[in-house]
Length: 183
Image (cartoon, rainbow, N blue to C red):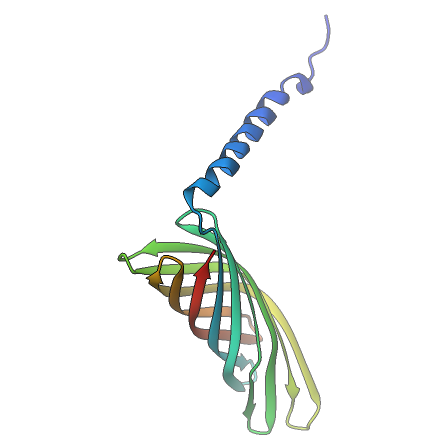
């Protein structure tokens, strides 16, 4: 009598999984022709340090996303710029990045509410009260909520609030408004 091996039964589940993934890959483009989107926003960021110093300024943010279906997307944020002073201290946003999952809920034909969740990071630089160089790098869990206003099938305006970093040392959030185009 020959011993049984698991290798004999492994191809059936692997084949079923491969066929299922292939069906999803073939069907996904048929659902939506406008799968990718690009956005540009003005963002009013706020940076609060544990020591009680608060900084805020106007910056820019770019968004790139891929729509998986009418409800869910993956989205990346890249942003920067903006300098503020608090007393004799100065902080500048050098870089902002985030990788997010986005969920959309249509409210009306022209508006939709969305929420995002993922991970984000920032890099800040500046000067402290003694004119010493300050550099901050922080990352963490990111959450946000926003509203899209559809202008046409390929263009929309948006406004959102993002809590990019909320740690024991710092908080970094932004209110943003801009436009998004699908292609």
